[in-house]
Length: 432
Image (cartoon, rainbow, N blue to C red; front, side, top):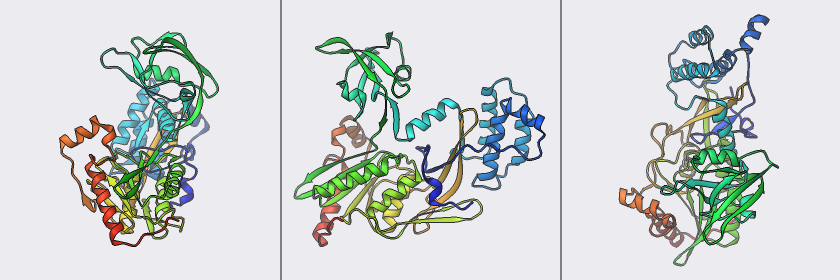
């Protein structure tokens, strides 16, 4: 299997834990099975087991299957009778565990649907982030999402949700409330809201498809230096276009340098990390992927950089997978200074498949290496400048979110120092 960039376009779903390729449903029964046997399989929970087994057999990165007799695993899976799909799912999960790979995993229909919604960079609903008040147990609004029906309806932070379509929320979990609020695009939902100083009132909204913001940016004046700060939270299907808008906006605002914050970013789509890398670099390699047959594919830059201004990248132990692809590419090409702590260390690529009953399977299909050929699996990216925060510093940043990307943030503060030194020692470079 020769991994081509085309394989990753367009994405259908992605995993936070790693860069993936999305594929169409692949349901192949072994040739030679009689029509009656195939019919029996399709009418039983064994159909999904065989679909999943075939995908792993065909694509899994380790051709020895962790030294497990994979043919024997199939015989055992299909040789047993299952009283329910749940029992079959449990058996499949047990089979996959033998591979010793936490990233190759089965998802039941609900988990697969949640994954699809979460990592597509979109959601269907009204655009509310909710939480339960620890003291009153009331469900309240944490944030109305940008460009959502909730924003247009005027909902605010701390609004309490009394009922959803007439159903009282008392005793509901946040998950139960969210499930009631979500629904098909174009349908309506009515929330009874309680707001301090205004009492209770009804708000009816029409559910819509909402693009989630993976990228946030701002200009920070640090002495005489205008820093373009960009925080990338995940590599979703909309991350690259959002990153492009952010860089172009900051270029127009005449920043002197950039800070790209990848702290806490768990990864996402491979193609998104490649597209974003190309916004920062004109030439050089980005990443090389190698499948189980030893076929490799090197993805490179294509002279589409949006800026040549100095760049610092912030990382931590939760910067994983696609974050590490981007960090490794910028570091190995000498394009950025990496600042923070050792990254997570995940150098595996997954493909995600939908199965015939609505469930899903993520399977590891390749290893990846940085441009210099470094295997970072279980090791991570080593920052150019290490900034280790003690527990007290971490707690202060959590308790004071507005301190992030300020002089009270040790990693950001160090990045500003590095960038200012570069600006002093190097002639200014115009943004492209």
